[in-house]
Length: 280
Figure 1: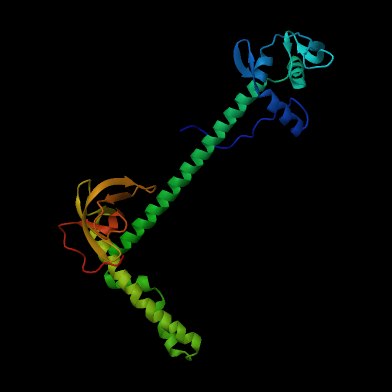
Figure 2: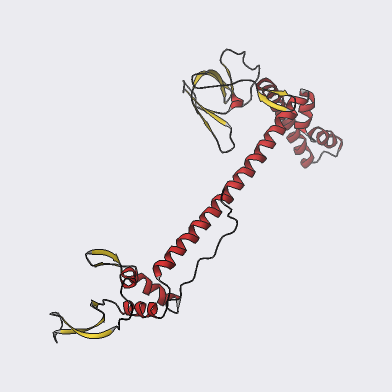
């Protein structure tokens, strides 16, 4: 990995004073012209001129002018279309920096800054991946190292205590609403805790301190897929990894299946006994 840490400032070009003036001048110099049987930018053409020429104004024949001629700036044998060609040639004659060199440095700085951004995104992605993996493993480990009753208590949290306290308080409308809320919340979270605990202990195991997946699925594996309270017997058609390194399974779509993509947690081998309960 390249040792890239901080962004660099874009270089400043000192051809002309005034941002607007310089922008207009450079826009002109970036136009293309046919020169010496080739097509190039005006600035490239002028940079190829020999040193020591003296730009001057000359009368050039023109059939479009009433007088039959027009006044044009000339550099050597080149008849200028724009005054900025002369300005740029004189700027170079005084030791000014070539615009082509400036553009090369701008390109190098932009490539450097792009690499800084890429490495920053890479570092952030890795940080998020590690944090996600740690949170996931911690959640799995809790389910594997606690009984279902302990797990339910952790899932419910302070809800049972709050409910008991509210039942002892004066039964105002607010307190009654709170009681109703907790009476609905507790069985919902209890059922979810039982389901999560059951699933986790079925598909993961501890090997020392390491968490291992009990089942392995490959392309062609027959699986039992749980989705939205329904069970489907189907086949793995493709696998891929998400940004956290977790496997996503593309399943053969069968009747009534809404989404054929699944994570590991929603699968069992087709020949395994189904869960007694599964809450999606």
